[in-house]
Image 1 (cartoon, helix red, strand yellow):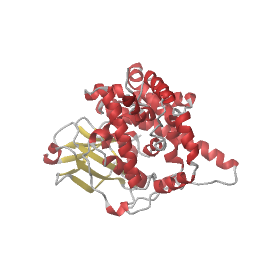
Image 2: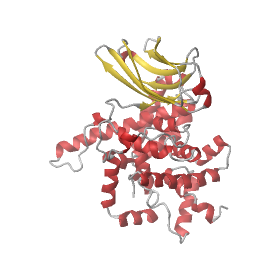
Image 3: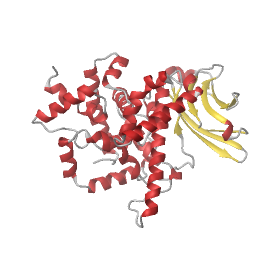
Length: 162
Length: 231
């Protein structure tokens, strides 16, 4: 368990802290729960690559945050008569949104896509990516700079941002 | 000492949280002393938009080539993200501009929520929503899968793309269901033809609640190429 924590804890913490809008107490609970689930899941630990393991772990944490957000939103709905911008039931799934964002990411060069995914979803730092790819951290930062611009243009093209 | 030109390119790394604490502090000092405007003030909603994808789904995109096909039928649908963008445009832009320079760090904290709370969802056109499978031990197959519980057992729908040359040239693939008691059942097999296979489906008598994971393998090998774990 300690090994798992040391390997994945810092990146997971960064990722969850952002999802929870800086709520450190809640983020710590989510991180501990997600790490515990990983530790209990021998199948993931034994068959997944290191990156897939981290992606699985971050996905579990993301779902924990979303579950909590839904339940607290539900509580608020009971206390108020009006509900602006009410969302549709969850059963439809965000298939179209996922598709649009996936297509925007696919339209980037493999190098740009890789740095964005590693930083945003896997919580890797420029230094870690530089080590992984064998390039200077400064190059990673520069690549991120252009990758985010390319992504913004791709999202603009698809009408997601202006 | 990092040049100003170099520092100007740290904006995305800062926004996305890729800097170490020391680097972030250095960048904030640069921002405070630089007469130049921050260039990424309109990118603060991008982290929230990216959060529509799970990390597993995003990781599955890393090894795909550029310019994947566009599936026309879905492309024409109005997306709820588009509607969300419309609402965001109605908000005061001045508030965001002020926030960008005064407290760029806040971007890291506000970005995560936007994509979720405001998205009304369209039903998927096929009736099932495929979710990206996690990458296995060897890269080359990028797949999406839906596992549906049925009165008679479990229905599996999937599609896959062969992202490396070797993957389009293997003899055949197996879709293997692992059950919680540790046994394996091959529920489907197929031959690669072209760069992808879509609309694949299989049925098994195994109840969904008994399935621990679903794996794509090259026939005759034990190396997982794509994996979905059920919880």
